[in-house]
Length: 401
Ligand code: PMT
Image (cartoon, rainbow, N blue to C red):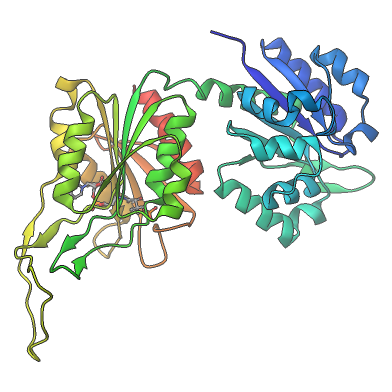
């Protein structure tokens, strides 16, 4: 396997001197390292030091080596980019897509995993502007690490210290290893909510936006898998994030069954994240239903259980099947207890239990998941953005494989 290439971005904080240790650790682990300091970082450490440590030329401005389009080349060739330290300024500019130095241009062009290790004074770290910037970056899939607590520059102490280079190096190397751990695998993910037509105008639907499924598809792709996304009624603005995946669009539960059975044959991993209607109207009118002034009862019939069908043949066909459980707790049991019971019933290898409600679970929100094995054991619990949870879910899938 070829050497991994890691871009180490350095912005202008005192912790910049620690990026030298980070570079040494990454090189010791066998990586080819390119340093991209901001002009402010060069007031903290020297270009010569970075060239000697990396063994590669160091550029700072986009106009340097313009014939090689350095920022695009760095971004295209990198297996990962780590920004350490990431100042409040660099975090803010990255959030807004500002590109007024080579590092910011590289970040804007990046398609590989990006890790940022913040370093700043406590007041800046806890400022609502920084808090919001970090949340937005994380929701876009950028891995903004937490900060350490301790001595800061000057007499201050508190949260805001950059994590130690050893911890950052370990994290970045694990990130790079992940970018290849699904290479050669075919992953099928379902996303969105099915619509069960009542007439040509109306349908029974649900609140799923497809966002979680799209994040799962992105994560599988970033780990090197070939990905098919079976999307039920997902808006184009959400689907945009699934670039590079094969897209199959469906509408109803029965469409989804047909698509999933077709796509799952030959797949290594199937993830049923879609919210599938359990019932559909018995009758679908060909013309719009007219108002009668009377109460109306609609008879429903049960839909096929797609996950159960996929789980039934999974061993024979050599695939790993993951389901989701959208649960609400009540006075009898918690959402997790219902999820555990469902995990035993559905027979999927893993079931991701998440609590849903009017303001919980659906759309662009943080979410809490518990990943449950088919024997009811909780193998992982985590909370955060859907893109972070997608990573946790694929880590659990890798372990299970
Ligand atoms: O799309 P988002 O807005 O990001 O929201 C994400 C989500 C809340 C939709 C997602 O996290 C989620 O929980 N998806 C599963 C929703 C669901 O249908 O849960 P369930 O408990 O009703 O079904 C359990 C499992 O069986 C699911 O994997 C479901 O896909 C599957 N199922 C359900 C019914 C059916 N007829 N066939 C199925 O395969």
